[in-house]
Image (cartoon, rainbow, N blue to C red; front, top):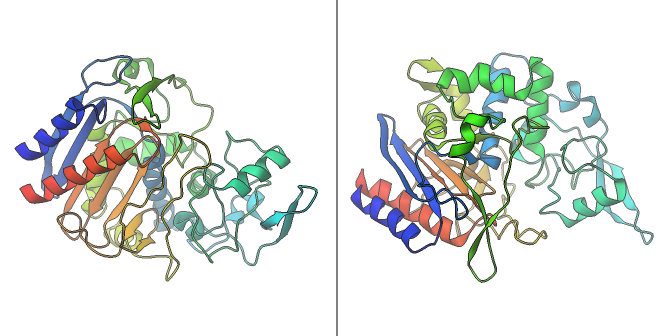
Length: 383
């Protein structure tokens, strides 16, 4: 593991990133944990393993697990229309463009949106950050950009016919709330975070966490990094299933290890093994999961193509690589990340999982992705 440590240390010394936390585990337990650099350029406290990060879309995996717990319990079925519990999702409309007066052209969708569609990003919902048509529609319709809701929001295509990254997992979180009768934060604490001992993860950022909070940064077009203001509220307005959690690397590694071990960690069962296996199977058939384009909002996201030359599919909450990555993860590993350049992978075939956390934008930062690849390759080489 000395090679891994040297690469991570070199990255912060060369100022490729201000600071980073990296962890890896096998089914037997943690095999690497390291923290390098500083928490932020504006507050150069040393990075530590217990630093708290905005996990952003790494929240999606936790929300997907919550939904599958309810599926396991028979509280909802994957192919039920989501409108059974979220009436605002009934009678969806597809956006086909805009007329000469700038008004949206809509038509009824062919088919209902199901929980499976939401978990696989095949429902038709997009993100305003990546979809100019949705951004334009929200502006015309006066829709809130804070509360990600299906109310009044059109689809970009008929459910189940294409893949598009969007607000789907936020809606999964709302399904969990409607079915369970709990807020998403309460559900997470009672059914996932608490049982797994993830005491440093949640939607709120209490006063006791603030001294451990990683600073946020923006990379400019010239490659330099600058700190950006970041003061999350102690009580969040929205507990978003698509991207609201804060947490530490060791906590998230516990969550990843639970999935690696088929739904159980340290004697605590979160999901049945067959449910975890189903989450890691292709759920979209021959639908192409294309790389994310660059965001049309400046500085938010680069093009995100994590496996050049390797077709990708989607499971119930996770990106799946259809072929092995040489020297790294095996085929059909589970993965995703967060917009502040936080990433994880779960490789059931090889029995390895890892997490790398930085805190900067835009998403898919080349320096962080290169470091992530070096870290992952180092882990496999050392095993």
